[in-house]
Amino acid sequence: MNTLHPTWCDPAHCDVPDRQASLFARGGAHRSKLVPLNLETEARGETGWLYAGLSQSARSPAGVFLKWIINGEIVGHIPLEQAEPLAWLIADALANLRGDDQPVEHTKAPDQ
Ligand SMILES: [Zn+2]
Image (tube, rainbow, N blue to C red; front, side, top):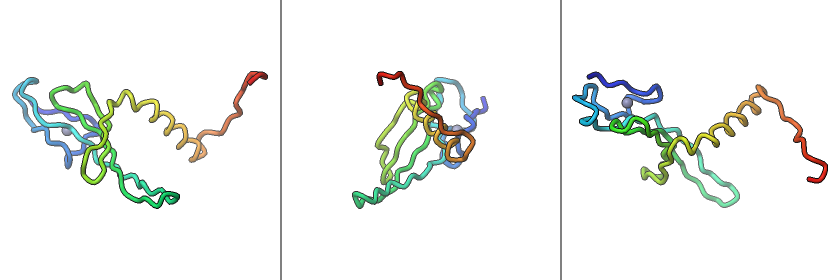
């Protein structure tokens, strides 16, 4: 059977074979391109690059992970469902920065 890839899978990083005999014989993992994030923190004088990307085992297609890589080493492997709330916060903040969304006033009860 021909392998189908998630839309985020990058052929340069994926190692799932093009054809696989069966679900149980599947090997490899779908992987996205790695997104570089500059970790420079001027106040502490630290610099470096963190790379973030997605991976999914071909054998368990339900599990997509957000992985964090520093100096070529995977330092974090987070189930994507746990990263979703952060993704929505980032989407809101980006919409605000682009001017697609406007800041709002908080409506608080008088005793807060
Ligand atoms: Zn793939």
